[in-house]
Length: 605
Image 1: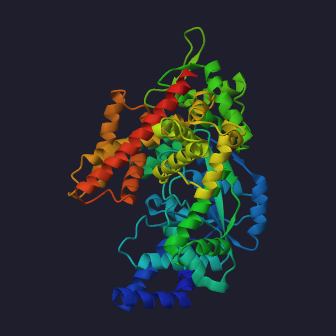
Image 2: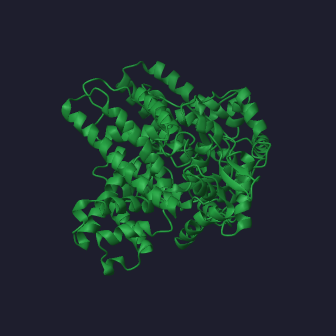
Image 3: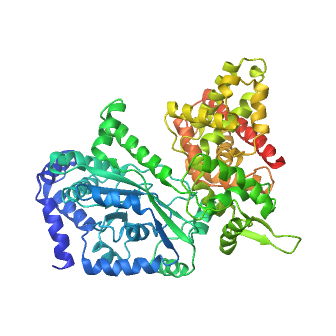
């Protein structure tokens, strides 16, 4: 059967379902357009997205994948793969990886190959549908979808039907639910569109299809060629459009060895159970409440599965040292308490993390030196290391792959500083001091809610108590005063706030300051505000008025804009709006000042 016949067969199977007939009737009623016109448009949309798996094409695709990923050795958790393979015998699996690289789908395909999985039907942006690879991809299960279908009622309806058809065929699916590659290294907020279509399709299938399982997947690279380009985009540069020329250059760049790519799988999530659980906790059965709950649970599981790499830890240690180069011994001194903390919490590590000894740290530094992210100066008494000039964003990318493990600790540090500097707590009893600290922590959590996937407030409270126990065992029984709480930060050998949340709060503070200058009654241009904030942040960095160059970030400043929107600060309004904007700016400035206190203590140590 030819490729055209395969596509045509899949389209005809969808067109022949009662779901299609019902969808067509609903479209006709909603749009008022003639049925013939809607039928032709829906058939064209289905033909555009239809894919199939051809054995000969898949072999060619796999050979190309091995060549494009030749920079890496794939390190995969085979124990979890065996469990998933068994689960996949009865149910459709929906693989939901994080997205760091254009190579991610090829890496995941290689990781699952030979473990009893059929080829995934992988949804990808139509911007990558470049002939002739697009034809080969479609014959290997790649579904090219439009990046936007705004004001188009037909295309989303057909995508729902096609996903439902694939579920009824017991196919495995895959897509990258962040909607694009991360620009900062951390997991981005999920895009709900395709997941919403999947949920719609799953519900519409009713009892005609088995349960489906969402599979969280973490993909982490020791080094990435793309990071430099992503960093330029974050600083305000423009993204190079995908083309055959771009693909040729990208393929050539993969010729260098860049270590390993680590693939880990989180516990699978029953879609039926997840919908029931999310629905029971939502205020209504409205999918606009239910789907985000499911997506955030998947995101939590991706983060929890993400292994900590040597590159992430080294970047962690070298960033935010006031630009000072460090010897091997000094770098070890910074990393030792961090590694001890990681091991105490039993966080996942890659097998090659061996930074407690000079030789292990030297190897990790050497990989970053080869990439040009770290510079080594060996012309003195002993070698010293520092983040290379203008490569801070790239180093931050590696560090940010694991910052989610340290956000609660970082927030606690800042909250302790703020509470201990509050005059109201000087003479307060222990309960009042703790309440003040917790209130500050919750306020910081709210400031950062568009950057990190926080647990529920009850779980967040438990995590803060756990972190306090690590900082000062038996703190509940001993009831420390405000002065003693301040000493918890001063005496600590592990201070993380300036490295973990400092850049985010600085970026937010710049945006909030610029927002205050806007006339509240005038319409606000969000893109213009972000562009201006990037320029102001760069100026402040050059004037040494900004501590973290990673704060000069389009993505982070976009998060600040979301926060302002959530607090209804975008306008239009009057003097009351101006005051509320100033309140946010003051709140962020106070948080940045507290970060500065933590930083100064850390540098002295």
